[in-house]
Length: 534
Image (cartoon, rainbow, N blue to C red; front, side, top):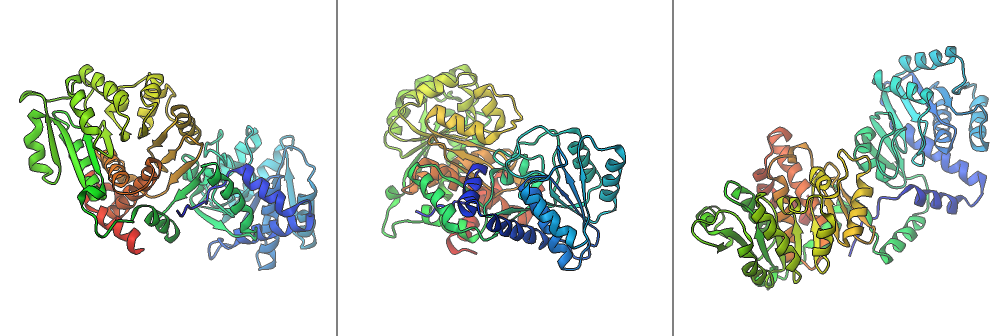
């Protein structure tokens, strides 16, 4: 199995740094020099007035190294250091001395500096074409002093072309959460690998375009960390629309038996769609069928049977109740439990409605389902609002993924939205439930109970549309049923394919015009891109 190991947390990066430098100052400064040079590759053509604003840690040293390199290639950068105190550490002093030999003055400003200095740096910001932000690195987690807030806000207010070193100052490297303010970068040059803060909202929004620079750290240092995670079943990974990630997805979900029949490619039971919301079940079924499922069954109140016979002819229908039955009730539970024992995957929730009788049915069905993989979405999650303990108990013997958006997550857990640290919340819930959580949103997070996670980077604003979540649930169901993968792998591959299909649809239609049906209609193109790498 190929796994893309390309997210590393700040403590792992620090450990790799320490292992590589091992107290060797010359090796450390060489690393910082390469980091500074890599940042300079992204200076836009035609820029002349370049301002470097550094902090006093190694991130600040990266900024000074960038200034030194810029001088060598013909620029005359302006350099400011923001610090809590005027003293510089050994590394900063080393690079400041190098700048002095090149006749580049280094201005130091602290919270006790007089107003004249503050006005001076603000004037330099105003005059600059490009600002290189090297104030804080990925490991910073304290509070911003007023001086730092003033400088950061001024850079943002003047909308200077800004390049952040490793991560925008004010963004938490491990969570993507933002302090009282943060740099809005046009480009972020991060080193060696992505950090969570580069790809998780809201930090992702502040990063702009993210480039990963190779600064000469031996890959074996990161491979060791990756191997340790694999042994512990802790996958920290992200998937984007690139060759490496498409290959990983392809190796997981495109291993169909050329001699197989429909029974070999899995059976999906869909429990969705009350009267007035039958579109949800239709979208789920069509997405599952387009995602490889050999057989898809739609369980439906008998009154709604004709709708599904007309709209999803490929699916097998399971009519329930009387001719007047229009929503799910507990009288359907026994029959559906029997059907579920012959299914590989059960998808429950989209469009079920929120009647008391339906909520009773959901709870009883979930509690009794144990022979198949379970995808719990939408109204099935609402049935457990403010009762996460019962959900945990009901899922005790089930292989499952729950797929909430932020509002549903908040209803389940009581955690008020918007969330400052979506990654930690998703991981905590997965651990508590002893299962898998797919937290939908920009940069969807898929967390498992062994403390691993995947962040999906495909998709766009166009897929934030009614029915899109139903399509995602159906894709996951189809992948889980038709491939020899875990429900966790099906979930992150499903999120990837869903977003990729949305991207292809948006290319054709614009993000404004994409709807849920467009995502389904472009699934074939998404799968083709993965299979053929086009």
